[in-house]
Length: 387
Image 1: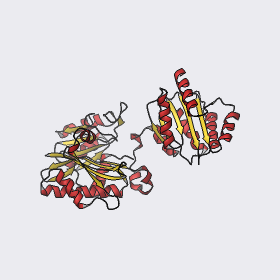
Image 2: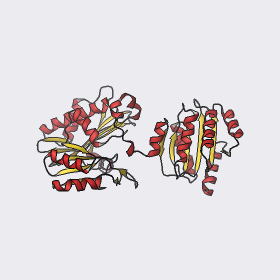
Image 3: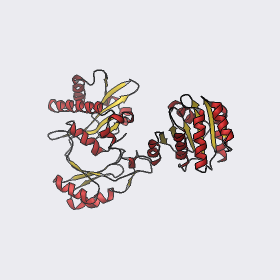
Image 4: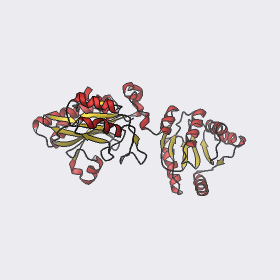
């Protein structure tokens, strides 16, 4: 789960990581009041969305005069902000962060992330802050330090010191940077983060300040992070993804035309590969999971029907814990409750498969049944071609 910059900075402050003075505003009048309370000019207005590249999209404004604050805030609030990371649809801006502008001497990068290839955590640092760290790592890898963290012992002070000196800071600032790195790691662990990032961490006249903040929290840990779960902003998420989460379905919207519903992430990936192999494109990732009920299957079909891009519904189930008869009943319930004008292709295998196939055959509904993966691929190609 992603949270906004201002929410991440509140957590930074709680852990002793310095941030600029700032206030949140939801109206242009609140923005003006916030700028007046900060009391210094210029101020910076920062649109709060769950995406980077806001500066390139016009989502960050430096305001030199107090009389310009309301107008600038009005231009940000209520708009769909398009950045290189949002896609053409953009993200809605309902909150802005009003901050003091700082006299920046140098920009640095710090981050803690999960490294699945190492089965652990890594601390990342670069003196090339303020830029896309992936681009820096790809083009000039020597400018990025990767410090592997043993999860059994955590980030050690000597590692934090090594990172600080890699950044080329003088001893006084290096000690401050070392402390910030250790605090960022503690926050990462305490809040079950999958990513904690300061980009940039800036050098100013009297120290270091986290000019930006990014925290992603592991969805699977939200049950024990009630304070973080309460920060969720569903306006920043795709509506169908929000709806799916209400029914405990794992759904991600894609840009294709074949709506697929499967059980298990591995089968989902294989199904999407199958769809692409015949020249079609998956419209989504939808994993109903092993503990799905017929109602969850029914709601999954409804979500697929709600996507105007979908031209074919492809249900591909390999029943283990999830029984094929449960899936068949859910699909039939959906077909009876909502008029389905799209072709529905179904392949069932595994637990109670014969019962599931009989339920489909006796339903009186015109489902297309596939026998095996190659047959499913052939039928997907034919249906999409005629669609």
